[in-house]
Image (cartoon, rainbow, N blue to C red; front, top):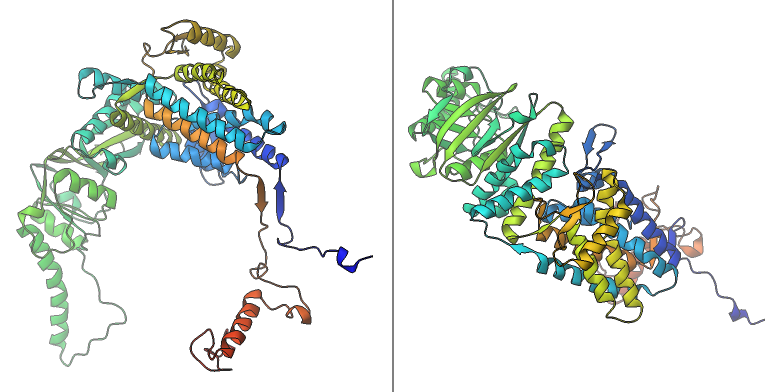
Length: 590
């Protein structure tokens, strides 16, 4: 027997590494994605249920897809792709986070038989990309443009906000919140600050009271900060005040513990104390001399400064949060100062009215009638902490939807109508092509029906009958393109006439992201999961034995080899030293 006939086994991966490849692992990845989609399936639509998630410390009740995905802490490497597209949909559009996960999961489910039967993933991916591109183009064709400055445009924005709130916990109060949301976003749009919506529109939560007691402040409102003695003597209401914004500490600070001052006379000590007091008084005098009525600082304002300002009829607040201070600066036209030297009128902001109000158990500083209409604050009330937290997420989603509607200036009907129309279009297109692509595009078209089907299931209707009626309506009637699921009465209706409107960007982004995610999953032909090592040096360790380097780490062995080679050339790797001279002795040295 030839001695060269046996080849030694080559170990490339660490012991315990899990590798899977081929058709089996691709099917396994698809199954994992389906399991993730099943976790959020029942939250879709106005009749969707909520999920309660407890992470050991905090309870969250939500039906927002992105929130649930974030809290589930999914460990499967391929299924994390669905978490990513849900997060991107939340950041880009704000709504549709559940439907994008459902679409991606359903596309993979419809394509699984092709993978199992041996169709090459590249053929599947190529046709999925084509179908996804056609779907986005069809949505853009179907979308109805409108002018946001007209009264019809305002109504369109209200209906978009109401549709976004329809599936939320506060759906029954959309008549209160929708106008608030549209007012806040429109004022931001008119001032040209739409891109900074997250930082300029604040949502403040106050537990207690009724949800109908929530209100919108066209300006800035923030909770009263920590205050010292003398605070109650301050003036709490101003008309046309001048506002000074600081990032300065107005507090008498003791000298550092390790400071050493040598004196020869007790009077010298008194002069040092006087100098410390003089420093704080100079700062306070500068604030008053500039003509400010209200002084806000990001850093503490001490008891001395509080009493000083109260005696002179000023209002002050220290430890104001950074976001609130920036919003006040934007609204009032003031500039945040890092020093009290050289203050002048140009750095002061102003507003129509300032008042400290009692809201529930909290006191709020409220700035209204501001020069700039950039900032707004929505104050939320509610019975429980979980309810208010979910209300905040709902308001945020609706704000993002109205922002997207203002940018795209085009809407489509919701309720599964768009998905059914695009599905019909793709089925017709599939009949014009030959080969496997026809079947794959048809599977993609069938996958789009998951949205109306799930809306029916969640509302307790018979999905088979309603989908059959929708298919017939979209296929035979010219005016049937906007027909979707009638959640209120069961059956089908023209959802556009019913006022169920969504920004076209929502659907475009959703379909594009779902098809991309499906392609990413299908492109994986091997999954390698490295074990979590108990020994930090295990990854670089070598087998023991004198011929294998006696268990020296690989990095040291390579380093010694490099030193030997470099030394032959007249120098080592750690500098231009000669043979046998090391850069460092001791720890890590030669």
